[in-house]
Image (cartoon, rainbow, N blue to C red; front, side, top):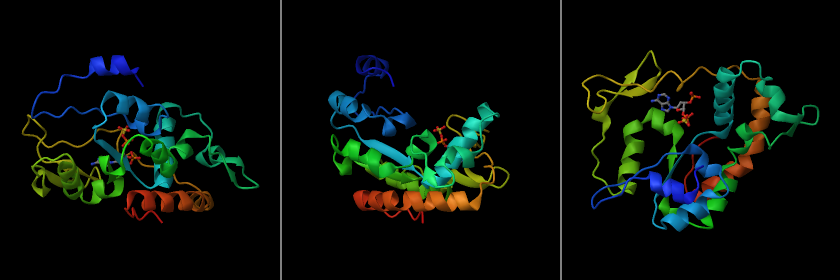
Length: 213
Ligand SMILES: Nc1ncnc2c1ncn2[C@@H]1O[C@H](COP(=O)(O)OS(=O)(=O)O)[C@@H](OP(=O)(O)O)[C@H]1O
């Protein structure tokens, strides 16, 4: 994360009728981020894309594995002690998915109405619907609709019919939508049990049921 003044200097000036956006996934889990952003601009609207924390952890691991193929297995990193089933909550892949805990930190500085939670699952199954919510939240006209997307069977994900400034279709790159390794189902179940209470708390805090169970 860049220091506040530097971060502000890097941001372009926002004129009347413009919206300045900044995307840094790690902000949601960075302890100092809410205070820093709030002191820069209290009215900032925040958008967080969340997905099932178990799939998120496996996705995170898959990304690391692609860069460092020699890391231990997902199963061995998950536990502090496999025999007792004690989960290693200090492993970032696990820690990041405890959304309720991170959200508590943001609610010290921002009202819940200023944060939009986008479902990662619906972003795939109904991209236009989810982007409709984003446009409404930002006070924009619903310009992006169903017409802008098609389902790419090879990629297995929705893609844009036409990329901005181009007449060609555009999918996200090779690093998005990687095949995940098969994980021991017992470990997956243990993680489901671990996250359940945090997920319930998160649904309660956001007033949204993300259907992760
Ligand atoms: N349209 C489309 N195409 C490809 N991928 C899609 C799409 N929509 C959502 N996703 C999901 O986005 C996941 C990658 O996002 P990340 O959060 O890792 O992105 S980022 O690196 O933090 O910017 C990526 O996770 P993985 O499947 O684990 O790669 C996808 O599940």
